[in-house]
Length: 149
Image (cartoon, rainbow, N blue to C red; front, top):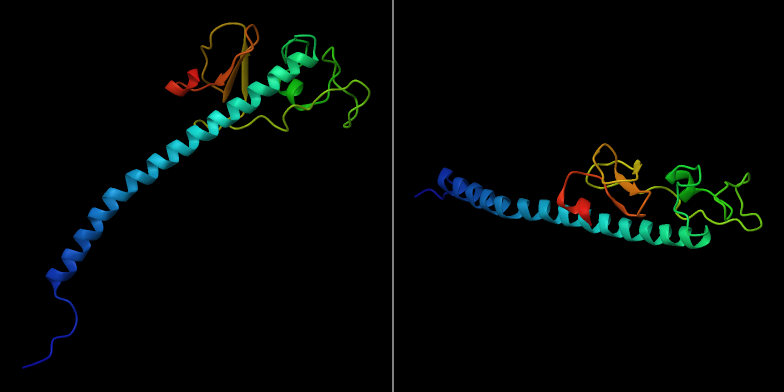
């Protein structure tokens, strides 16, 4: 009798089916972990920017960033005095504050770091963030449930 070597077609098919079942179980968990990581990143970015907005408000006579003639981005990323006037140099001079953040973070759900500003409720979802110049609210600017965080 001959000694058999190798695998039969049935054995190979069984292994392929088992691998397919394992992949079907594992792949959705990786995509869920990716969404959870994006959400966690979004929450961290919101906390950071919101706390820096509060610091800006304390140092600028209760004025919100972007209300003294500067854009929100410039007010948060440049040196300014207590009246919100930008510094002419890159280093802090006497009574200069900021920068509060090095750059505007990127919204992980729409890959945009642009900040849309307005005095009322957000009706445009064409940027990464929305800053309400009346209330000081800073939120994710995408048409999803986490935009209300």
